[in-house]
Image 1: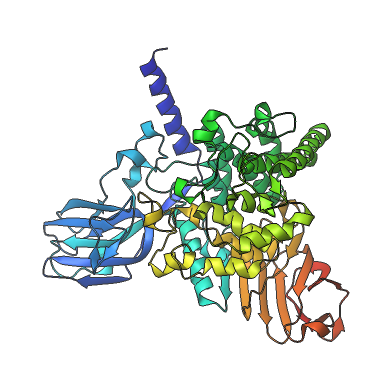
Image 2 (image 1 turned 180 degrees about the horizontal axis):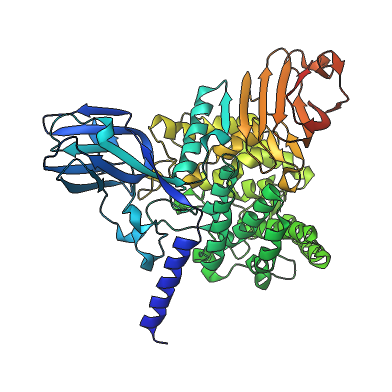
Length: 589
């Protein structure tokens, strides 16, 4: 087989996969929220937020119109920014309208993200080209431009249901952040699998995992995560830790759905995502020169690595490998593969012991970047803590180390940083980082007018960045997981943990979709703490409630009406069990 024939076969295979093996997507008609005339020739159309799509334009009259259309993702001085920075999108096209029938107006194709030869995931041919845009300027339109004359055709996952999830709290900024992140996940379903934004439209394993976590907390669909997993198993990318994220994706799918048949099919191929050929006698990954110079990614872009020192023993890549072993062991035991489960568990325990001996510094009270350096990046500490590798006796010191830092990592690593803080009692620090008045927070995105999360915190941190990158949407899962407190306790949500975090808030409420029914939580934190919980199906739960706000020292227990329930005080919380179904209101006094 010659090279040209091989390439043709590969292109056909990729095209077929991208068209046939992705969750169903559709174009949805959306009206403008505002239309204004800028001058005699120009109308400005605002659709309210950025989505991926194009236009359908219809004249009221049987007359010829030659119009120029400007699509924009950025706005400046009352007009579309026609020279936006980085990969922020602007396109211009022309359209001839000869009658009062509908005409599709599509932007010009960008070879990098609409050509299968560069592995871009394609949208259906009948759509024409889609582009992320919010604003449109129409030049040359005769007469009044009305909302029904210009329809945006936005591309979304067909199964998406806006009513599947909700979140609201007493902090309006948190509410805006959650909405931004929900809109981000919805808008970036346009390709049918999780892609990394408009610049490439290519799936990456870490991006897909973060998308998956948030998607599960927003909508009932599970097909998009599965199809993204299948695609990435066929077309893996290059970073070391991204391979581990395939095991993370499979484990997240198992915990969310409890679908043993799906996991059984995927389990054999997951073993290839371990780094058994790179292990030394202590069970640690050894990084090659190629790994050190390129493959060990730690964080992205490179400027977000907090000065990380790369060595032949990398703390971050080892942390991901060890967590993958524990996850794979859980999956093996769930499938009845006891010998495999025991093998992965033994390997994980050995590697974890070696990990803490090699990388934890008692003198520095935290982890170093590698075995041959004393440099302590935030990454060398946030990942071990988030991934459950820090022994109990070290956890407080590592948590304190992180509390002394700010958002010294990218929007990707922020998912793990927030998990580490919430899981170790630093709840307020997590909220402070999300809403910080700096250019490294989701508050900054909201106040900058973003309607889809960015690839990086700001243009100055990644000058070529996309403004439509859902790996930055971590609060979409973080806020319902920790402020509402809703997480699966067992695979398939057969049991649920509810452990709300108040963070100084006076109330929070929301709806979490699960394959085992929707869960509704509403709480108020005043002199007493009151919570109402319900679900559409009966689900056993463990409930962990904060002590009443005033006075904490005399908190007497958990009550349903005047009945005191059998809850045990554990530290600063009351813990008990029950079964969710009809609404239950409990009060901590």
